[in-house]
Length: 130
Image (cartoon, rainbow, N blue to C red; front, side, top):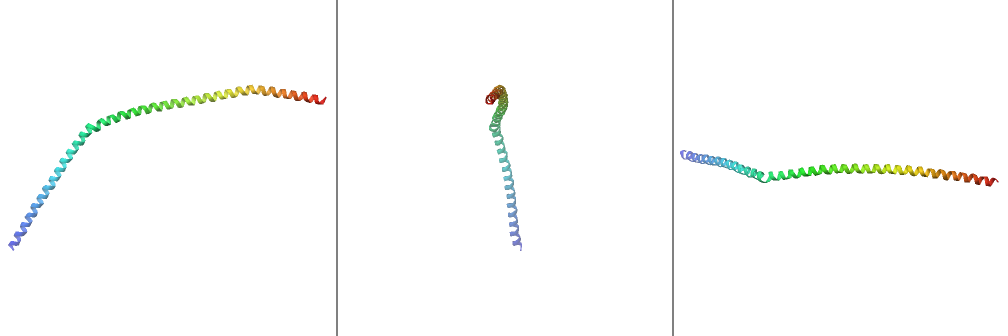
């Protein structure tokens, strides 16, 4: 039986050594992963400082320009809209004045023609009676 315990102890020893090696490999993979993470983060920070930050400054400047242009276009649009409304109001006033003047002058002419017609009708009526 002592031979059997020796074999069992040998297998247990081998399993213990393999478990320790596995643990060390897992710890090594964790450390390597952490080192790779640190390197990638350093690379990303460098890229951000060299590439992204200047691009963001340019984009922000462009956005500021667009904002200024938009404000100017909005102001000009409001000004043009106000000018159009003022012009339409002036045209309406002018049309009203022209309409009033035409009515005033034509009403005098129409009154004169009606009076003339009545006078002619009364003259014709007198001639037919006699």
